[in-house]
Image (cartoon, rainbow, N blue to C red; front, side):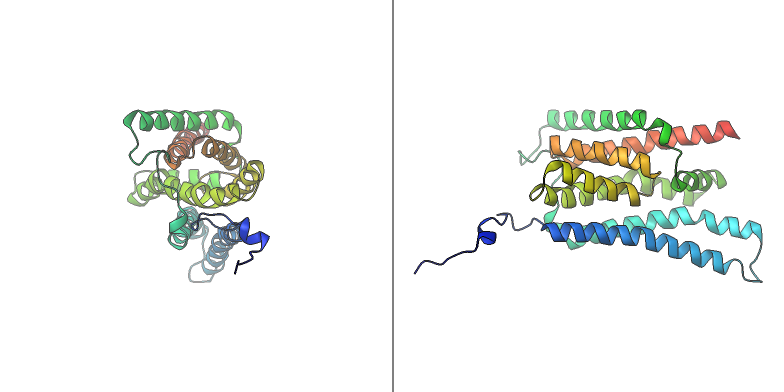
Length: 250
């Protein structure tokens, strides 16, 4: 006896590790909600706590508000790690998907393309790097104590930890899943908007430019390594330019 299947079952993706559109969109919605709710809740708590009579004072308020940036970065990192743990089977491996062992020349080419893309994003987004509260919080946090250990830790997270986990989530999980069910333009725009809204490094406009560039890069290369290098390069170069601007203005 022949078993009849519904059309939805026949059109379902063969890859069992792929996320459905609902799961991908739901993940973006949760990230967007937490990306705003957690830092906002912390800021409101600090605003209430430091204005109590025993703790009141403009210096203490300023000191607590400077902690908003590292807390936001920590929240973002924990969100990315949580998504990776939940959907760890859906992540795309680093390097070229066509080879079990990526040849050195392919890795070198990926590195060259990634660094070049990061530099190009910084050049295109040069005039919008300083726009947005995230950029101002970053500058204020660094200049408040540039040689402190906690500053070095936060900068290390921005450069070395956030790029790989961010690309695993936004390109390796969310975008890869959307590409299987939606047009590439829809997948790129949706992922880039959410990325720009919650990415803690800089403001929305620079994040949007970087997100679009990384989406195009991932569609072209299907390599998380290339996207990670582009993300890290843009973060380093844009952060350096932002600090140089701030120092000249002092």
